[in-house]
Image 1 (cartoon, rainbow, N blue to C red):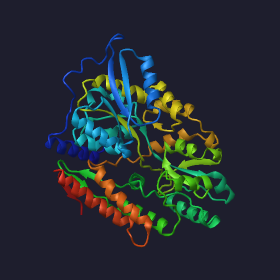
Image 2 (image 1 turned 135 degrees about the vertical axis):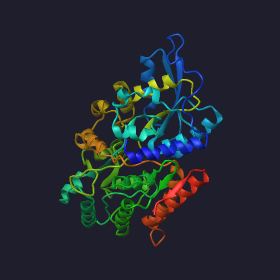
Image 3 (image 1 turned 90 degrees about the horizontal axis):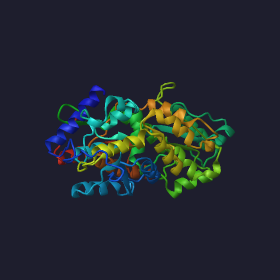
Image 4 (image 1 turned 90 degrees about the vertical axis):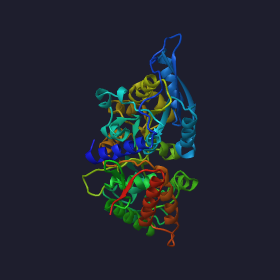
Length: 444
């Protein structure tokens, strides 16, 4: 773990402990990690990821001393996280929860999760991409089992690019040049979309640029959403928006999906999991799409942030911690689990466990992309994920403020700008953390 990240996460856990909310271990009795075939231990599990039921069915069919009871809940952004938080408060939370990386620190700071460090030995942690272990390790403790990584990728209509002799961009300067050429070739067409409704899209871009919004001394968070990397990224995207070189449709909206179908959007800046999503939106365009690594600041120096990505965490009230962790590790590191998930959902998720990548590669149909080796590209992108990024303990406040401003940015007419959005997000985050009793230092 990097020194700055270690100090940041120590502050997270330290501050949470001061509020008397962090629970480092679970209920009173975890002795029945396994039951018997006649009396198995039952682990309850909540998730919204497609294919989860099929994964549970595969586990239950091959295990008789541990059985899993699954309940599908709304995705985090559509009510799943409030449901989890309310269940934890009421003492009725399931044993195992699906939580995305950006939300993990918030649940830790609220004391909602168990420290599962005793179950994640060094040998087990070596099975995972190091960046995913970094993002699930807070204050020197392990709080979740990584499931997937979600590095950024640029998907593009290779037929359109070839027809107009446009090269896939390797740098962000190349991207702007390509955007201008796309618009010149077809005035109603855009190279890609800036999603105003999804703050994590813009956060991934500043992450890739080397930004670090959250870090700390020994007992206080240091917040700065306006560091040079963030300001540089904001100015770049503001220029693309002002010059109408990118679309500003909302993510997965009828406007956005319609533009893909009509061919007026010929690129998609998405995560590794976006390959399956895109293929499902425009199946009639099979063979017309390809993927390259995300443009970077300098040619030959790949870098990536993450958009989404999920983990499995044990709720603080569970008395079946060992069994829950065993199931979580099976989901993340067993080929039967990867096959079940991808086979049921056409998922293109990049497993956090590199040994599972060949399994995912064989299970995912890449014919939509002309048989391209997508997982080779995903692995390369995964290795380039910036290790400096730390999610703060108040992602809701940060994202709400940022999201409100992004909507005004794309309206135009001086409603707002991306640099202003960064300042608003900074102020809202600092205010929320102080309201919650956490110490905050603002960098000058």
